[in-house]
Length: 325
Image (cartoon, rainbow, N blue to C red; front, side, top):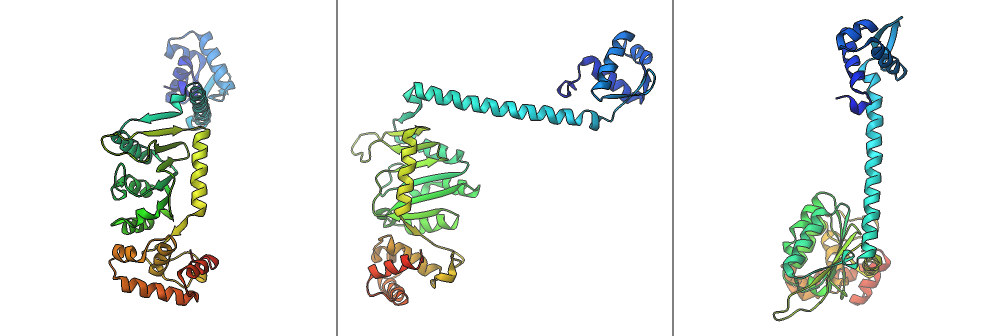
């Protein structure tokens, strides 16, 4: 049982006997263990050198306290195991990288159906540890955004989500409320006029995207799972470039907005402004928020007065200059 602490079978028996007895001489230990006296002498000499026993009188020994004698050995053993585990993980990663270089199928895996794509969407989000990056285009091909329960679970365990929405998607029924709910849970959301592709990237290790953007009739959707490669790095760079030029969408349930000292807008006004700057039409905003078009127009006019703007373009320019968004 104490092999992990570096004791062989005889040393363990000697140590256990000394712990039970408190102290004993060489001859007594040899007799109790049924071993030769010379064998016991050699074992005790080695154990004394390694700090397991101490000689209290000529030929008489007592055990060193287990937590003192064995504790540091176990710690060193655990450290050695941890180092070995890290070495194995590094070697495994090098092996996988080498295998991917030799076999393109390990870099890009083709998913032949919507069902396979949906399963990977679920799997990548369930396995995400740090961050998920998303391009959300209008017109779902696998599932509506409202059905992505995996995102809510991932946000709950601390995974960071950065999502870019296509403007047309925000005009679909229920999407404004859905985006607002995600933002309340921690999602960082931005909007652009159009996106080049649907895409999800998990932990900057794996990307998932359809290979054909427009599938009609009986044609089955196909998608690609892209692993660590120059192609993956290019997809990450594409996301970051789109993120930089996208318009932030902000909303706060409790009315607390970042940098409130320089922004005179409350949470509702800031959310309305972010939708306007993202290009969502006033009629769509009214429908999504359950307001009349006249109410939305009145609130937009109020924002323009606060900014001293005569047009909506001037309002957007002022909001950018004053860092309202």
